Image 1 (cartoon, one colour):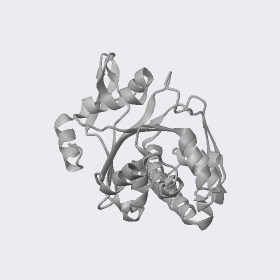
Image 2 (cartoon, rainbow, N blue to C red; image 1 turned 135 degrees about the horizontal axis):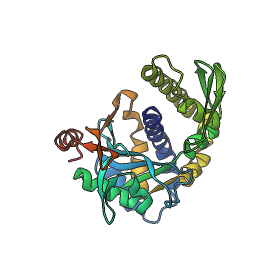
Image 3 (cartoon, one colour; image 1 turned 180 degrees about the vertical axis):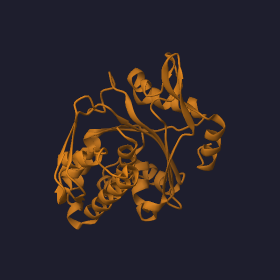
Image 4 (spheres, one colour; image 1 turned 60 degrees about the horizontal axis):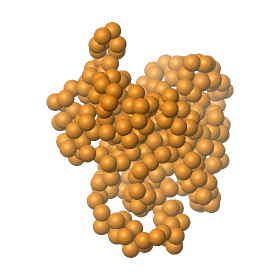
Length: 296
């Protein structure tokens, strides 16, 4: 997956979490075992929510065997001012994996699932992030279908295939305004070869898609689809993030804007070790970045 799709993936997750949170608040209001503790945590807990976000290269996020994490990001949300910091960790980052020595950090998911990946990230960064959210690519297509598709203006004919990609890549879209279903939305978002000014145009495509998706979420009819959204969230995620935290995020939706989401990549540079390409972090610059966003 390219950097563009990864950035959209994170934006998409944050938006859906913000929608699911307030809906779930009402769903759970009369169906929780310890309501006093639940609501106390929502009202009185920390205003910072941090978790490790993992996008896996398998369509089944609940199967760890033979699965590596394609997207690894630390998410830190300040619920008082709405700031969201997303720190991407390149999947080739050279890291010490407990019990397996030093190798590429994305191998940790294969060895021990999200728990070992979380431990590996904390050891690498010197942080104490306690929670993770693992998300499969199927979530994107599911949610787009649930909300009835997303209206976009496809800027050109898009034709590209790559059978070795994971998931396999088959893109065939015609130019023009249209409503994309889940499968076509994935094609649109994964296309990156034909833009004249690739980075700028791909960012504009992301912004167009997210804006259209937000419009769908604001529709009164979408509220009726909340149960289906919750089922998709449950089916396509694996997490130890307390549900009270998800609800807390949702209840602060009004403080979030596109401008408040700050995405960065861990400082460092690629290089070779034993003829294998790795990404080596810059420890000093990384420490500075983590302190700036409140993770250290």
